[in-house]
Length: 93
Ligand SMILES: [Zn+2]
Image (cartoon, rainbow, N blue to C red; front, side, top):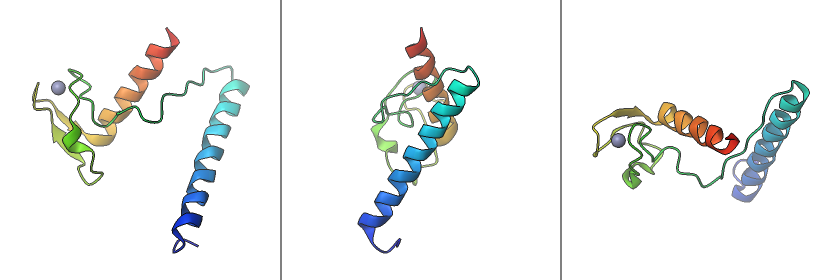
């Protein structure tokens, strides 16, 4: 199935849909807020410290980067997680 690119994409899309559906359902069940952010939000490209957008780190192979503006060193995933949290909190207020 994975060799068929279109089918593999459909499977991964369905899994993502199911994950978000479950998160929304469980959040509601437990009295929590479920906030979606824009799927095109550049969470891994934005420096969490200063907000600089570094388009040179679009490639998923880039796992760590240093902000050319403020020299903060970022782990790609941790930086993205911080940006996603901040964006979600911004939408709540
Ligand atoms: Zn920065």
